[in-house]
Length: 412
Image 1 (tube, rainbow, N blue to C red):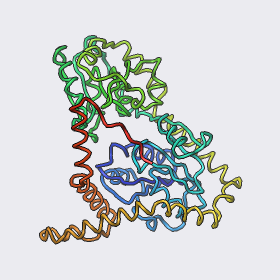
Image 2 (image 1 turned 90 degrees about the horizontal axis):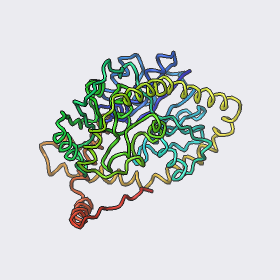
Image 3 (image 1 turned 45 degrees about the horizontal axis):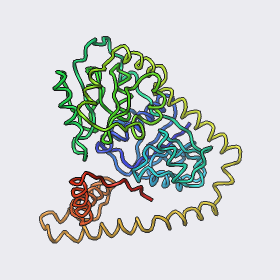
Image 4 (image 1 turned 45 degrees about the vertical axis):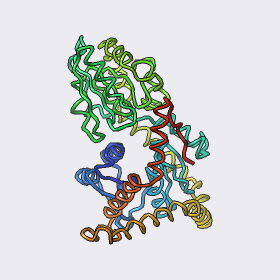
């Protein structure tokens, strides 16, 4: 089967979120599928794929003449939409991995047959915000590479080492609570806040891991005891056999995390370390969450989509009139975002006179890498200097002094 993967970027900055792309593409290639990956921005992830013998393109024109996908595995709305227009007679599986990242909006092209959510929150978003029928959505939680994350040979009876995975720069500094808890209990601890760290090199040495998301699953696969936590707080209990399915389907984050941060809460987790429970969870993970099972599920969805498409359903969707009507509506809705982006570029380039030594930096980009560099520079400048940011920070600080927080606002 010929599979076209799409992604907004394949560079080191995005490696943490795009690791599934590398895993899935390499495994599909290993199962003798003919794989090509499309992204406008290339970096270390793209190079890794090339080193595996997988073709990576930055433009649709680079796809070999005569090569047409049987299925498009679409990550990220914009790039998947480009692929949908380039191959209007090919069925698409649109993937959703986040409820907050704008890039993760589903592709709505006429040739999208199925949607895949990696957790229940993503599925709920697709249904409630994007108005996609539940009958069109498949839930496929993350799998774990059991070869990269082998089970430890020995489970220590007494907890010695705690590893914490998170972001020290986040608003709520829960690392400090954990530090105090570990020191009061006399256990060693290490904070790891690099989103691109090779977790496989750390997890086998941790008895207890505080983490969320995919790292929590990887930690459990090695035999570490896992306490799910994040900026919002802690999960009510350890990852255990009786809550494993729910936690995995919630991607070890979101609604699971509701207990407030406190030194006592973390001290209780440390005191309740149970290597026998950790071993049971490890065995359950290794029996049910192997990434090869994820590949099996995706292959089944691919085959079903291709079959449905070939049986005639595709001919009804991929007509010229259907596509032109959809494309007009799509770009109509994106007009505001496009104009805002172009205006930002214009403002940025006009600042070249203020920085004559680096005027060339403000020239229009001619390559996908140049586009990414300029986009990041503009975004960071707006984040740093836009007056709205200063107003919000001032209001947030005032509310913090009053013991209140700014409520989350869902984007439309």
